[in-house]
Length: 345
Ligand code: FNR
Image (cartoon, rainbow, N blue to C red; front, side, top):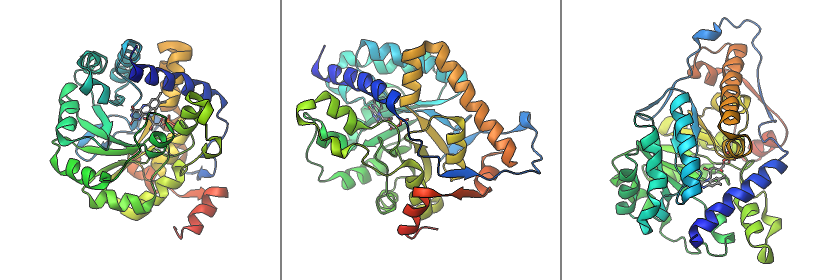
């Protein structure tokens, strides 16, 4: 196994170990206001959404996880089958490995083979050249490409990148030069309003806030490199609901926002959509269900997520996602204090 593949395997292993320990729910400060006069017909609720001109049957995305080696191929095959069955968009993990090593391409291409008509997102880091972005899109005939931001992970990872100058200009180049929609995403540390504005000014039209509260790549890298672990930095980042509110309050409808980072339940998805997200991404939980309980458990979990979303919408009286977005929300605790401190209404 190559060093890169071993690293990816270790990310899977440690994310599973850490997922089990995760106790906090960053969405617990958010409450959807009950509507005692809901006039919704449960079976008629419309949960379709859009990201720019991409239409999503459901607002749930299986977010970027893996690729590049044989176990990753098996994971991607299962995820793609389930994405097709449930009508969910799905992102692959970083395809950087398949640019350098052509034999790694099969583990990504399998996603398109299993789901020829579905919405599939390519994935690569923000240091990629325009040619590399075009190559990863073409590799899987992707409908959009995710450009990931993961500075904390790279810094803490022994073999990670340490120089980040030029990132903003590169994102601008990518946003202007790629044929498919570009989604800039964090991987679990969140996006603040200042940087959201910069991204929009770069021409980015879809942002996945990838906030803190779920998968924590500092904690993962600490376990891969115990000798140089920086445990005090675990938990770093902007919690997902805070990041969502920061970004949406700053950029309004100049871009479509995806909520991800620590989402577990259909209620978390409903809260995210009520806060203004156009869709919600799940990574760690999906991987956890698949590897611990197999495809049967993952299917059961995704059915439950969808059920909770639909029930929540019915209980607030929302027939569709634009009505859900207009419903009042209660924000308390640390989330409320954070927003007040930052002067966000
Ligand atoms: C990830 N994530 C990720 N993101 C990305 O853009 N490219 C990648 O290659 C990976 N790889 C990866 C591996 C593993 C094992 C996990 C669990 C996650 C990050 C992922 O897409 C997401 O942004 C974060 O995990 C936060 O969401 P959750 O896990 O809290 O739902």
